[in-house]
Image (cartoon, rainbow, N blue to C red):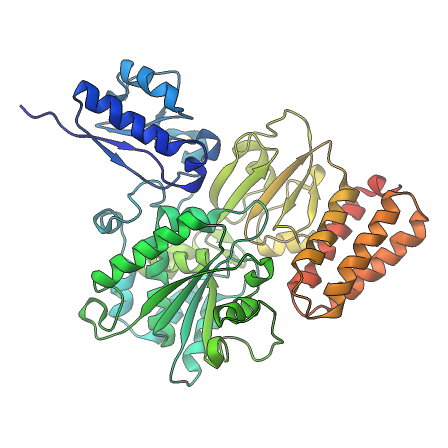
Length: 513
């Protein structure tokens, strides 16, 4: 009698690879071959519990049993304990879906991530893939846009602009060519959700882009991925080629007579290319530098043609909206923030990783309940939410609800959902200096308030830290912040004062020299 083949899941996500996932997969194969066990290793994406990586899962009749974090030296003992049958071991975490960190989430955009082989169409379709695209092919562009608009989907890259309104603008623009651009230049500190999705469920991004093309009349798409993401770039290229061969891209999508194709482009390492007009300049082969608006890209974008630019997570949210309906998606969240947001926990945190929750979850729930507090065991002093241009939020304000408007009321922003935790040892004056230094390095140099203001801001903070005429220099620093906020052409210079001002407001004792 032939033994049943046992499925073992070992992540191919960059986070897992960085801590030895390939070695673990090879060791499992080696020992299984030696003892005559029939196994199939599936390289899945990450479940997002990064402190448990590499997380190895075994498929059993009861479900997938998780073991982690696993090192190559643990594999023999796992076999000795009969982990192929899901038996106990000191690294055994039980059923993956029952791990509290995972079980308390609301996975919509990331529903397949970590569950499937990222480039298996059979897996993708089995878990709901292509349902949204098939419904989009069977309806009109106007109806697609109406569904997306009613769902309340807003840009997940940070700006929070209503996706449906943007698409409607491009649909109504008259042009012989239109484009869809996925902005995967994920440069904010503490963010990795775009990467995780592209490496763990790349087809959902492609599906969202094709639907966006059908909605707006665009026939060509570009995915602009930061150069620091080689695994994501390779996975997306494989996914695109697979879709072309499967008639999901090209001149006749699934026999519908409708056309759309996608190209993957590698970024050149500039933070400013996360800004949409700089990204378009880079795609055109020019220096990544912002362009004055208007005209907005939806009217005049890539190569002067109407162009929709959406974040990876915005586009990846579209298939489930088309499949399940606007009402289904809108039932998650609160106020004007509908649906879910993938929050990314980093810094000094015990359980770092990705948490997808409906808008309205509090910062305290994310950092303390999901994150488990600091890894160091030291008290939390602050978190920075929304990337390097986001505000510092003191521990006393951790009950703030995480949505666009609630955070704005406190002088903070959601951004791309990154949350970086700092313990009691952080020097907030030096963090404020870092914000100005960061802007100095990453500014495209086009406008004076950003290019010069950041340098003068850094110099002024150096004087404050050194104790030089602190009161006068704090006044000067505020003048610089106001000039940068009001005079900069884009958010690079316009938002740099946010972390500086929040640090002074909440941690003024660090600015006394």
